[in-house]
Amino acid sequence: MIVIQRLLQVAFGSKFWLALFLTAQLGMSASLAAEGGVLGLGGTATEESAPELPPDPFGRDTPRHTIQGFISALGDNDYLLASNYLNLSKADNPATVMRQFKQALDAGGRFQPDLQINNTPEGNLTDQLPANQEKVGSINIGDKSVPLVLERKEIKDGSPYWQFSNETLRSIPEVIEHSRPTLVSKYSVASLEDKKFFGYQVNDLLAALGLTISGFVSTYILVWLLFHLLRIVYPRVRGTALPLPNKVVLPLAVVIVAVTLSEVLVYAGVSVTLREPVKRFTDIALWLALTWLLLRVIDAIFTRAENLSYKKNYTERVSILALLRKIVKALLLIFAVIVIFGNLGFDLTTGIAALGVGGLALALGAQKTIENLVGSVVVVADSPVRVGDYCKFGTYEGTVVDIGIRSSRVRTLARTIVTIPNGDFSSLQIENFAARDMFRFLHQIYIKRSADIEVVFKMVKDLDSFLDKHYLTNQEWNQVNILELRQDCYVIQLQAYVNASGIAEFYDKQNIIFVDILQKVATYDVEHALPTQQLVVDEQTHQEHPAAPLTSEKLIKTEQANSPLAAATHDVQDGDDEPKDLLKEVENAAYVTDISYDERAKAAKLKQFSKKPLHKRQYKRAHKGFRFPKFKHEK
Image (spheres, rainbow, N blue to C red):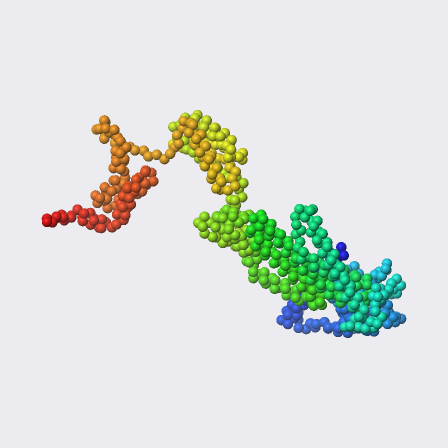
């Protein structure tokens, strides 16, 4: 709880980020107003700007600057300068009050972090204190507690400044009565009491250094033991290995030391002049170690997610997880840099405003890229398709081969690769064929109308029961019915659903169902309606030779002689100039009748011959009709 409370105080205390935002907005408004004044847009030229107030000579214009100046004066042991930060009455002795105040601060004074103290001349107006008061810390000694409150005053010329309130100073003597000797005062070296190093007491420096080293070593050993104990107990409780690596031990120990060191220094009685700089650097170390720890945890979380993706064959998620890991790390580092530079005393208002404008410009410039990035996240999170799924999207269909960060690739039935941006891919209607839990068996058989209707009806009922009880079909929807009555046949529709893991397995089961159905139909007195060819024989020819049977060879010859192809050939050879109607009839006959290969060859030659000009065709016929006889030479 102390760790969490400390982190919240450092990061979000006193509504720091809201103050930064308001400061940025005020700064931008002021700059716009100045530009408007230059351009003559903010008012008339006769308006006079308000006179600027002179700055406070002691730097007490804001609560944060007041505390920093007071600590600096104490570090220099300049009590006269430090007394300017106290709201003393005329009867108070500045040296006595300052000595008591410093003693109380050394014994149990705790100032708020710099980022938590308001840095505007008006102070924090959202707290429950009066507008001219600001709480900056407290003094806790034993059961006594005194709040450290600043008051806002004004000089005769109207310049505001901040000082420690007189009410706080009046409570100091009562608190000192309950103070006890500190560890530093008990165990300090007498010969080093008056010696300083870089302006700090040597005894305080040695105490702070010893407490830091001993605290870190003991904390590291404790965390290491707890981690390895958890590494042994966790698999027995959860059945899996501990997901955290041993790399988190060192940053976790640093975080604990950074959080608790300030309280340890207060308990030991280290001077407030040394505690405040140490506190500032421990806050920096805290955020560095916390960032380090979170980076280790992020790596562990995403590594585990990637392993699960490989285990469950979600390989398309690996690239998205790698990208998200980089984004999370980048955001974490940016936040840590902002907090660290804020603790170092830099004014980040302008930087945050510039970062916001730059981020907006980057977002506008990379709008399409961000859209595709978000689309890839949507495709992976929603999972309409996965790598290896056969799907249909837009005018394309094929097998998904890759889902990348910017685009996805699909191999079509023509074995080509279609690359589509993920922003467009996520907005399309995607039909995933691989997600089918069963396959539909839907076919039709045709029975001649010559069959008895009762036999047909009984066959339909038996096929319905047969298909419903077949071992390859399920109970989803199995039905056999007469779908249509045509002039030449009955159209019987068979419908069922088959469980299969893929299309290849479905085709194998469909073959078995086909064979079983055809064998079942063969047991009934029905005939399949197939495309047939009707041959008409001249009755007069048959009467002249009644005794001669028409063999199949004669029938074929008769058909060929009477076919449109023969007529067309005869007309062309006779010199018909436009056999186009006959050629068209030949082409139509090729789809209706079974024409042999030789007949098709003749039709092709005839079609080619008909395309030649009329005079060339006539010349060819004349050339064939008038040939010189060939003479044989006698030996």
